[in-house]
Length: 80
Image 1 (cartoon, helix red, strand yellow):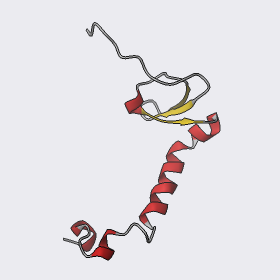
Image 2: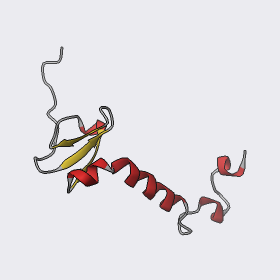
Image 3: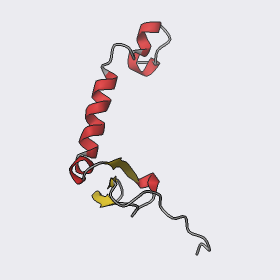
Image 4: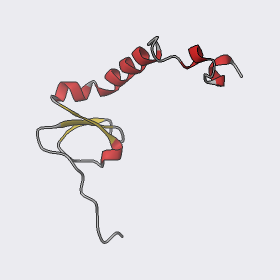
């Protein structure tokens, strides 16, 4: 049993998506390591995983962020 527990950080009125419980939370319910946010609305938090997935696809296809263009890119991408 821990003598001192860390309190979660955040404010009421901020919305988060908890990755452990797969639910939307208002304010600091779960530890920061388990949540995405803050988001301005409950709806934005509800779509957190979709937003992250869309951003990842966009960044992976961004021509300004291409490791292979410099010749010293990731070998996994080259099939090594």
